[in-house]
Image (cartoon, rainbow, N blue to C red; front, top):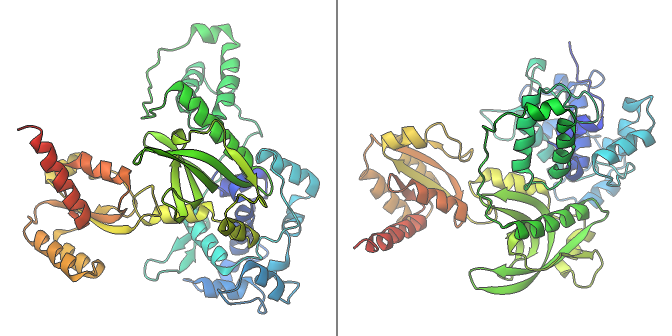
Length: 478
């Protein structure tokens, strides 16, 4: 029998963090420990659990019998209320990894992790399992997402362990540096040009491009052998070079803040296109996205409408020369944000990822609505079938539409209206359904792109909006 035997190297931890070790260090440590418990030779939790197990089954085997069970307990309560000094919630990162990194010292391991995380300080005395039950539940979901556990097909919230042949395989790691020596001259040139095209997304790629350019052009023969460019990447990045430089500067400031401990919040002037005015914004930055034409900051705080919560900010609409960094304790930071920081309950990247999975739409904080689409069969075969829009967006048989509406639409007037529309449509057409964020501009633009061959049946609000737009557009051609 083969057991899980990967050591907690920077590369393995970064692999478990999907390349984002700086954001997910504690989670990465927990995942590595969990995998040792599930599939390791010493623990082999997989053999002790039922074939299909839920969190309660897992919790009873993993934690001490004296570990607090309440979901209402805070992290601080978990730390103080568990009386068993041998419970895993009492073990520090240092204790969890020390044996596995021998003969390397903890100090050497810590330095390698810091180097991998860009110099960020890590606290190896902190206890990664001294956290609320929801966090560990989410870790199991994350392991299923990575392929280490399989979700039960019959029971929500249950999993079963994977046989060794189905375990995800780590990338081949030859050295700590990126080795391009085995690339041919043609491959080197193609890689160089692709990285140049993508470097705007992550400014740090420019350093990689410089290094590869220098290496590629060191040999005169390679310069003579430079192939004609045949691979082109066209991204709808609409910014001028000057604006892009400013956006890259914001990007760099935010990343530097994430690498500092204990971090802080940012303040900036923001241009609201809809009302054509500037507002001062103070928010906690959570993550960055590139989404259809621009870079966005996903942040938590008081949004442009004065509501406290999530909002996505386009970096090019920040009009301040630089972001103002406010360290925790600064009197300008809204009281609600400061309280979240003091309680250790600041919003996380994991929450954003979970919400993005629930519905199609980048603005994950908008209402979640049922989407039903009708397509002409030929159009569906050419432009919709076999494409991936969102994991919830999938084909549905005409005969199943009424049942779907009756189950998901609670408002009786809307439900009857949708049933009447469906009854009037042809069973021979192609139908799709899914969940969307109602009001997300990127989703709306996709729905516009599909017309007139694609009809929005639900939500009613978007159906009526597109109908009005079509009437206005038709009036332009009178």
